[in-house]
Figure 1 (spheres, rainbow, N blue to C red):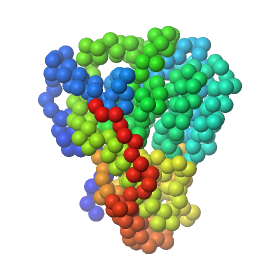
Figure 2: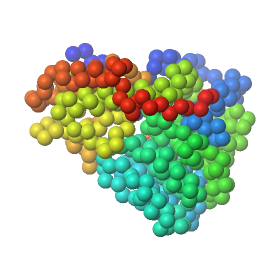
Figure 3: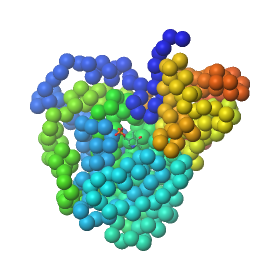
Figure 4: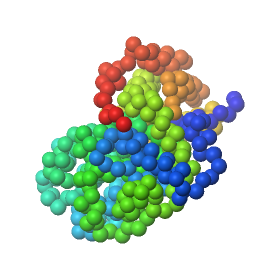
Length: 395
Ligand SMILES: *Cc1c(COP(=O)(O)O)cnc(C)c1O
């Protein structure tokens, strides 16, 4: 077969051609009115993306983890305590970052594949009055679980504790209403819902977080949000920005605006629904208790070598699914349906699952998964949860 790589991975993701072209445009200098204009326009666009009018969104040059590090360095003091919701590799990353900065943590253990109970967050806050910040992930990409950030935010708000959310696979995929829900800080990376290559990290900060940012006493220089704030007021950046990626982001965000955030959310809900039903029709089981819409985590069935299956898809078909990470390696595989994708990409993904299973000698009825997904993708078959549209605030 002609090798035509298609990324069904939860970052990096396929890039729209117009975004790639913007990235390839001749270089300009960043201390120019031309570049400042892009920053000024993006200022409003990014607020729309994070659904915050009150806050500002700061753009660092790094992968998503850099944005998470910025949260730790800016929100805490040496003596303050943090509450971290675990439950997967990315929840654990918050705890690892706290440890690297010498910040004491209280953790909530969540079994892999399960969703955190908001009551557990409340109980932890009640028990330990020294907690200053709660760190959570909206979508735990390693397990495919969606946590209820709205419910968690309603608790942190009541306790006047800051909430910082890893929305790296939430922004541009799932509703995240920072102002309405009361999320103080949220972060994302460019290679997921933003449809551009890796390399930008976005940190959205509401005014509620600034007192902590001013008081923070952990080491910070590049990640200092105060420098970012002062520069952004003048439509510039404290250091050299990733100029090409920022220009690519502008084009990608324009595409999101044109489609409408509510339609972007619904498209992801619909693609995720069809993917789940498609794999279930093949007799496979889902891994996540409360599945997110960025990816579908599927249990590797008994009698199938999960690693060989993923390798065959990649090497023989050019279809890139993601394996399970660490403990979940060989036990699950993950099909991402994020960003620059539509119904027909979903059919490609499901047909690849079918064919991979068939060629591995696993009993499967060819066409069954695709037929099911196809039916689910028809308009009349939109599931209830995908129809329910939270309305984003306009630009
Ligand atoms: C991708 C991802 C990250 C960040 O990973 P980087 O490799 O640093 O970009 C963090 N959290 C979640 C939930 C993610 O999906």
